[in-house]
Length: 151
Image 1: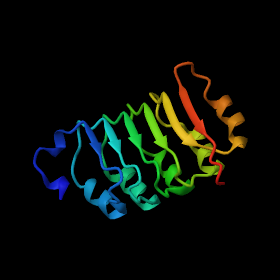
Image 2 (image 1 turned 120 degrees about the vertical axis):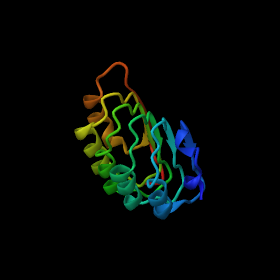
Image 3 (image 1 turned 90 degrees about the vertical axis):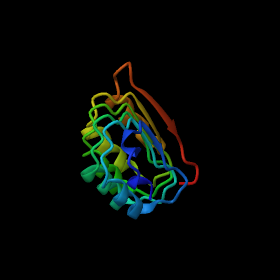
Image 4 (image 1 turned 180 degrees about the vertical axis):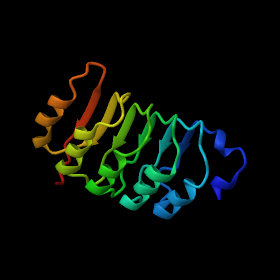
């Protein structure tokens, strides 16, 4: 398995997108330490709120700057759990097509746990735009919003 390799802990960028690693794969991934990891891509990896919980509670990512969890059914529960991630350097969060609703997005904005976050990419319903503009008044913050027409 990839996480058993001796030099993998020095990685700065890890892209496991489109590999369907699932929650079980995340559980194996978090068993190793990743002290240098700055970017983690888990797009379309079949991760649920359970996998997000493992990522948040067991994986030490003190240098994480970018996280992409798009295409995973993390739901509101997973996004709310994500807000407990202790990633002080996180600057860029991407979560398109995650089945997150207005409730989960509001929970994220109310807690807003990452002081360095500058870029947020996600899909939202139109009703969320007002809340978003009130919360994100910082000039260095960039937010990309797409409306999911399938909802």
